[in-house]
Image 1: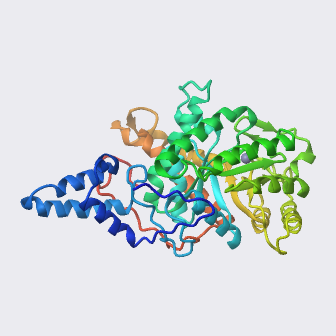
Image 2: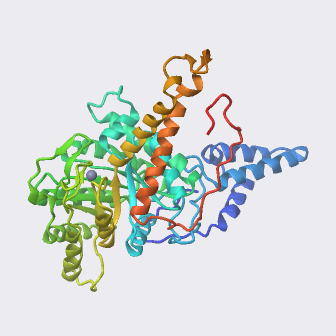
Image 3: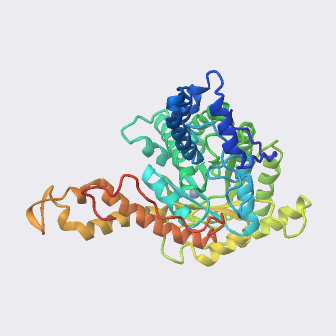
Length: 468
Ligand SMILES: [Zn+2]
């Protein structure tokens, strides 16, 4: 039973109550060849059922265990449907794990209608991904995990050749699979996205398109929820033309597109716009309408727009950044009137780049004008590092040699230099910083799950580890 392909325009809602029934039907009458595709849990279960009467009790135990595990699916291993309708405050299509197609569209529209934006964090390792999703569960909120081309390359490993973008493609796919393996376990919706892709990086983008198409053939949905194309350095006509071409391809597998017009100032991931023409830092309503018109014509296309309103990548001294969120408001009003939508509607879903270091007042104002996503990179780079810095400061004297510390010259220091110790400190610091991001964006308690239960551990505390 393949996951149903959910087109942006068709809402397919499967009540959760049906999921266990579907599982029971599959396990008592496994179809030919099903076992190989059902993953380890169900394979174990169906062979248990094949045993005779003596093994009946054991098989029932196995069955119960399999069902309990299947309640929290491992989406790349299990074939059951995503658990729909589990968030009291969300549209029914939005489910734990990676959301694509209609679920993505419904989630972003929910954000726009309810006046919050979703934090989108640039991640470079499984550790930074885990910290972000942990923070999302704490805040009872959805989150976006995204990879830049450089971040994706790092994810695959800096020792890997990247002359054909192979490392950047493999790293993004690897990160996507990591997110897909853990997101649903944390119980929150996750939007899986990639960041800036300039014209010279299009081979990277093409690789990701192929990965999406293959995943779609197998799973009925794209590997990623959406991708960003940033052709803002090209003339607007060319920018739009290339975006339309890709959106037509992406619409076939229900993947969303984020495009950029105007320029985000500052410096990020090797792209330096610190000397940009000041006029280019502010988009004009006519230009945004031109984009909206062209992309709206793509059948089943779904897109968001990163318009420039003075945003800058990186964190600079106060006073150097002049944000003008009103630009977004003026664009919404202008476009609503031009396309004949009623007054007060927000036709465009905007994206806020360069959110780090911005004034809370500006962030909130922008969210009010239809910003549904804010990118965060610099602030979580700092929080991750400062977690390691604080750890080193706290345990400095225990981190200088393998043996010998203030408690005795023969005392081993293994539990201090075990990388899990300082990496966990980095994660905790990032979770804490992310909590503020969620609050700034009013993205708190939007799922309706309430606070998470403290995690219990079947393996008990780690012997010889630092106390948690
Ligand atoms: Zn950006």
